[in-house]
Image (cartoon, rainbow, N blue to C red; front, side):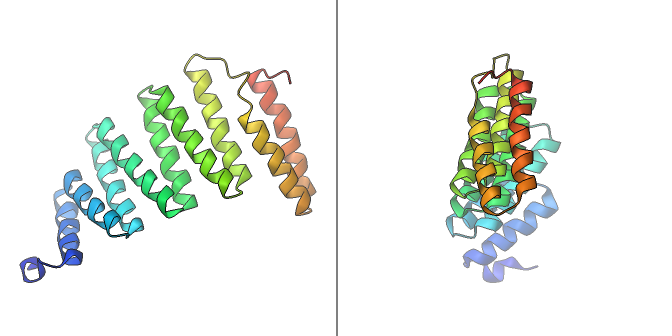
Length: 188
């Protein structure tokens, strides 16, 4: 393609960056593409660019760069309120933090996912993210016996399912609270 014919146009500048990034497998070009798309409000395309940059960085074993790109995509997803992408990108970011044993950052990302999901009334997803945070607390060598955030969300999940007349889901959530307490040594 002769991109020079349309080089003054931002859209085509990004199309050229995307084309070059694909052909060169260049995370920096993907980042430049993603930065422009994100600034212009094309959030899903910004996320797409950062995800490509992150994937390529992972392949190159540049884990800190990959984390940075996933974190950028995660923040854009939060800004755009893309619930499913928030969970996927947050969990992927946390997974890399876990691999690097960066426990505080890992826990923080899971809690960010949980807090966002909670604001959206997604009690199950919120509780799940908080449970992942609890697991990371334990893996970091600390005691999670006082970490009751998941319990609070499972209780909200019970209320939600009772109001929807899905008693089996409410019962499951109630039973799950007891399993969580048993797993993490919570006496309350």
